[in-house]
Length: 273
Ligand SMILES: [Fe+2]
Image 1 (cartoon, rainbow, N blue to C red):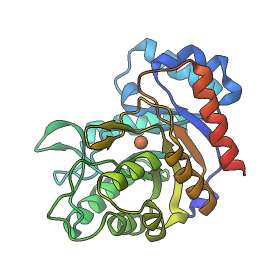
Image 2: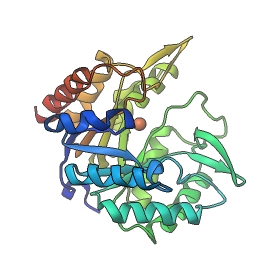
Image 3: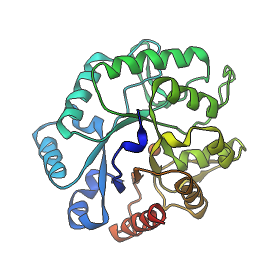
């Protein structure tokens, strides 16, 4: 598919309950919202009401956590059906999940686990993406995750795996610039070289937020203001391709909303430069 034909949304925020009043008060600062799909899959009436209010005011893009596209056992059909119903309900220009697995042997592992970069893993993704596509007919955009270990069984680099994954399955890329930065610092590689190696024209969306030092490592805690090194990487990506949407992902340590709005304005300036 042609990812350049997707409509450009601009700069948005990862919606959290905490922002419920603020997003309505600061509508002019938000071009769209990304919602965590999982929060609405078994939603009670109050949550569905919230979804309706958000939908009345914003374009919503669903970001799911638990498709587990890297699970060898396949896709959970019940989860897929519920996700498909949500996607249908909010009619987004694209939807996204991660390059990872979250279930193994029917057991939820509770976090986004990296897959080994192997031909076998690519085959698993291929099967699972085909299954998802048979139910949800929208552009699927896949996000790079941060990882604490590099799996020794990998047969190729992360950049090569990502490239094959999105090209073989015709998916877009949700480039989390913070995850790319964190991984590059923890595993000592150049994030710009990574960008040279991946099909940049498939980048549809960005995630950004500050990183946090935890002992010797950086982590993507989603708790901090975006730092200069991450803005530099954001700018670099924006210079190289047309980003359809950039989303600030803040999950805690919340500042006054004016500080969030300031980051959104800065992101918009970069996208429009
Ligand atoms: Fe992210």
